[in-house]
Length: 235
Image (cartoon, rainbow, N blue to C red; front, side, top):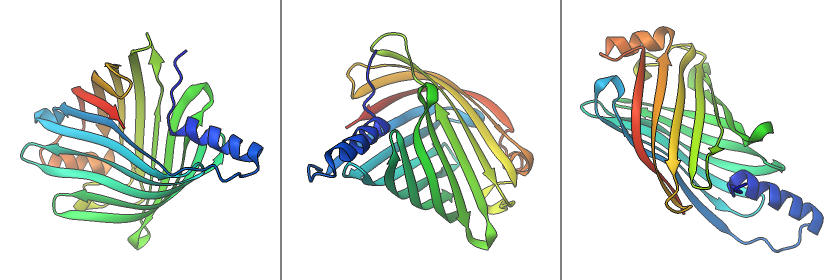
């Protein structure tokens, strides 16, 4: 079976190795950049470009993470979020992360304090779960989970799910309280090289409550199914 040397695997090996070695000073400074998604799609019937990328810099157990994701739709500007986090390996396959998150939409932005866990759950599900605290008592939570199924050493199917929750309505950001939105995706990639893989996929998303009301008021939809075409790369 193909070994996926991702962050969780590296952190787990480093965590175990440091325990066995008694913290010997063999701890080089490392860097990684993962462009997980760079894709074209059509939300609400409009052409758009969406991205999701992570970068980290650090040593075996301690790293500085930069996460970014968002979407630029034709005629509707750019919206997304960026996170800057300190990450500490606390157990094999699990990191504790804390720091800052910045959300932006045309004409508005929000900042949050962030804390969460990132790791590999049983049955090799990759999980990224975070909680956020903002101004005026605002709170939010985000949960992502994905799984990789290998048809061959190069052909890989990735189902994923994401859910967002907020404690208060925020009309300027187009967000309602409670479960704001969910997304379920399925992407099939072919690794021309381990570092580069084009993919095709489909994504279904749904907005709920006031979030859906705000979207419809701006000419959007409550739910949609999108076909995507993109590339995945890491360095």
